[in-house]
Structure formats: C-alpha cells, structure tokens
Amino acid sequence: MKATERFKKRYVLFRVIGEQGATESEVRNCVHEAVLSFFGEDGVSCAAFKLVHYGHAKKIGIARVQREQAGKMVACISLVNSIAGKGARLECVRSSGTVAALLRKA
Amino acid sequence: MDLHEGEISGTNSICISQLPKNFFFSSMDAAQLLSGAKKCALIRSPQYDAQEGWVSAAAQSGCAIVFGVCDAARLAGFKKAILVSKMRMLVAMCKKYGAKICVCSLAQKEYEARNEHERLCFAMYLGLERKEAKEAVGLLGKKLKVVQ
Image 1 (cartoon, rainbow over the protein chains, first blue to last red):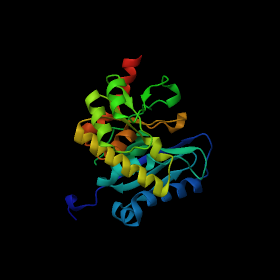
Image 2 (cartoon, rainbow over the protein chains, first blue to last red):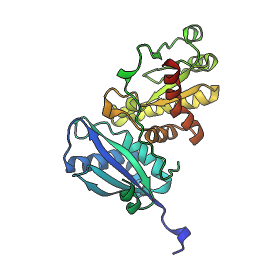
Image 3 (spheres, rainbow over the protein chains, first blue to last red):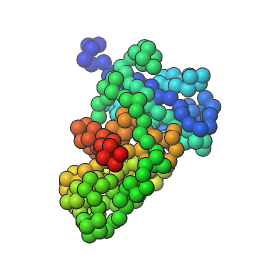
Image 4 (cartoon, helix red, strand yellow):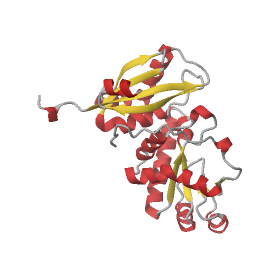
C-alpha cells in the first residue's frame, strides 16, 4: 500500500484529574460511553476510535482516532465532567501521530 | 478540524470564583445592552438563546458573547445535544452580525478548568474557523488584563 493511501491516525494522550479517584474500569467505561454518546455508533466506526492504552498508576490514557476527527475527539474528551458520578474529568494533554512520540514527550 | 502536534498548551483557564464580581453582563434586553454595557464587556446568557435583536445589539455595543465549555459538560445526553445545538445557532448568528465571541471554561472548581487547546477544539466544534477560534479563546485573557 502506498504511503498516501495509508489510514491516517492520531493518538490523543489524556489524563484523569479530579477530586475523587476513579477505578480503572470506571475510567475505561467512561471513555467508551462518552465517545459513543458523542459520535454515535456510525461515528465511532468512521472515526476508528480505540482506547489503545490506559495506565491506572499514572492515570494517563491514549486514544486512537482518524486524523480528521482528532479535534472532535479532544472536544469529546474535554466535555466529560464526571466519571461514574465522581467529581473528576479527562484532560487532553497532547496529540501525536505515534504512540512512541506521545510517551516520550508526556 | 485538524490537530497539530505540540499545540496543546498547559495553561489552564481560571475559575469563575476567581473573577471579579459582575464580570459578566447578563442582561437579555437589547436596549439595556446598548445603553448599559461597557465597551468590550462580556455578556453571558446561560440559556444560549439566539435572539437576533440581542446579538445585533451586542455587535453594535462591541460586547463579546461568552460560551462556556462547562455549561455543555455539566449536561448529559439529549440535554447536552440541545445546548450544543443552541450554541451553534448562536455562533452562526454572531458570525452573521459580527459580534465577538469568547470561549472559556466557566469552571466552578479548579479541576474543571479546560486548557487552551481544549477550548480551541470546542470553539472549532461549535463552528468557528481556526483563526476565529484562536481569537475567541484569547479574548478572556485580554479582558482580564484590562480589568487588572
């Protein structure tokens, strides 16, 4: 496949911040529910969303998304105001074309 | 809506509690807005109702209409969708009449404050171009400098 025909993707690094801690499963569920309600089933499949990684120790996660939808993904993540009813939110820290670059600069 | 590496800023916006009292002008009356609002005042309408007379008066008086990320984030489901739809209509009306737009967090708690990039993406999601969105995001800082 030509480089120009490749699926263009971006990785968005986010972290969990807030007053009350949320468990790993709660954060994962929250991300999936937020993205599904924001984009819809069709939108999620078109945007090729995937929660690539979530590290509960550092409370940072990485979401993969189609490059054209990266801005919408940041808006979607920033519109999360509570996680499982607890006062916490997801903050977008950085976005990049590779996971390695994200983790290096995080 | 394209996103470039390294554009995400670590600067957080400030909470409402840190702002001076009566920082936002909240009258929905066009006549009152024309006579009472100071030049470059920020007008906040929590319902985000797009009224042509009001937006036109805001444009004439040089006021900026405030859009809060937290106003949308506090709601969920259908209510959130309706509010975002209202915001989009108001943004379109502001563009039509040339009224200024200010996108800020309107955070009640410290952790609710959105960084510059999140606000920029939200502004673009509401229908602003990148250049307009950057201006809308930077307007609150300019206004705060004037107040201080």
